[in-house]
Amino acid sequence: MAEEGDVVSKTFRALVERADRKFARVRDFPSYGRAQGQHYFQKVFKAYMRLWKYQQEHRTELVKAGLNRWEIGEIAGRIGQLYFGQYTRTSEARFLVEAYVFYEAILKRRYFEGCKVKDLGVRFKELRFYARFLLVSLILNRTQTVKVVVEKLKALVDDCNANFRETNFKEWKLVVQEIVRFMNADTTFTIASARPFRYSAIFDCHPNSVQYVARFHAKKVLKFRDAILMSYHRNEVKFAELTLDAYRMLQCLEWESSGSFYPKHLAETKENGVVVDYSGTSGLIDMKLVADMTDPTLPPNPRKAILYRPSVTHLIAVMATICEELPPESVILVYLSASGKPSHINASPVESSGGPKRTTKNKLTSHNSLEQNFSSPESHINGKKGSSDYYDDYLWLGSKGNGGSSNLYPGDIIPFTRRPLFLVIDSDSSHAFKAGLTWCRKRRESCLTAFAI
View 1 (cartoon, helix red, strand yellow):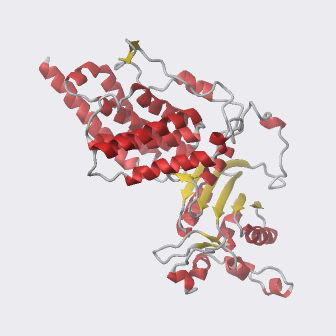
View 2 (cartoon, helix red, strand yellow):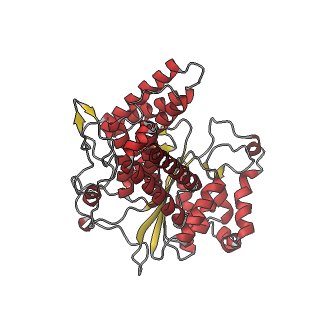
View 3 (cartoon, rainbow, N blue to C red):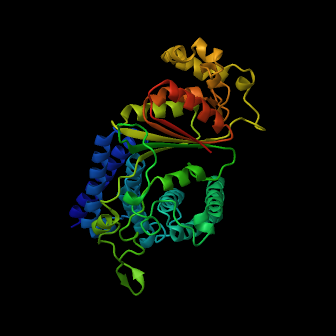
């Protein structure tokens, strides 16, 4: 029996190491693009599902061999991370729900709390679990869950400060402050009767009954497939890398399920009031729930790339990647929220010198001949807007220490107007983008709508 237990334990550890190696390959994959390592993700899912099934089938032997409950919670947390990662890449609600169910299972079964270990490494794992669960719960509008998890996170940070005095938990105190500030600013938490930002069958009429806006193109029917959401402001309300502006736009661009709502409780087996279910379907997704969450009458959610404080170069690179992969007869929405000028913020020395103000323009000129096409003499003779005017107003994306440009000009958007584009500028310089790009639209056959806030 002892030899059999050793074999089970060694097999389990080998499966853990193999799954962790595969997870490390995909952890830092970008969340945008349609062909970013999908093959690897399938392999990682397969490895973790095999590991999860193995620990369920051999739970008794593994516990005797010294398996800790927090180790089971860590495996479930990794699976939740994988599902949430798939949601950020595809925007499919079922992946978000599956991530929530795994995280809720960890919380309900107290995988991290039950053992009361005094291991600092395990405490950090528990802190990261709460932070990830909060993000998933926020996006799902599970306000009650958010409030419960916030209280648990506060208690855990206080407990860590008391028991590990030699370790600095300042960053985790800031995480608590961020989520509390986010909750105080979001109407979902401050107004009990606030309706969701998402389309909801409870509050909204069926999509087929909604009046359609004017077509982008006279002969084409375009489908909304992709969106880029970017926000950059000083001291903006955020949690992790999700700002309040991006969060609200994300909610507006998704469909609420018209089926049964998200699960409120998971079935638990109790004995004398204590959870003892160690070998059941702990954390496994309820497939009937996913079926209830799927509404075949609603269109799929558009893919969304959420960028937190990107550089101008990074933003343009993401836009180029998504536009290149945009399916035919599709339209992309770009939401940019930023200040129109540094204002009271001290500009970087490079910006003050005036050097990089034309940096982005020079890059565009070197890569294409757009400037030659738009800077015709007649535009200046007739008093119309010329290409040089595309670089007078801008969005400020913060000072960059690498010497790159901090300014996004209307002219930087011009190359992307060759694809169907819906542009939303939330800034005090939005008028420049609306005027400049509307003129650009008149000069070429493009499907562009510029909306200034």
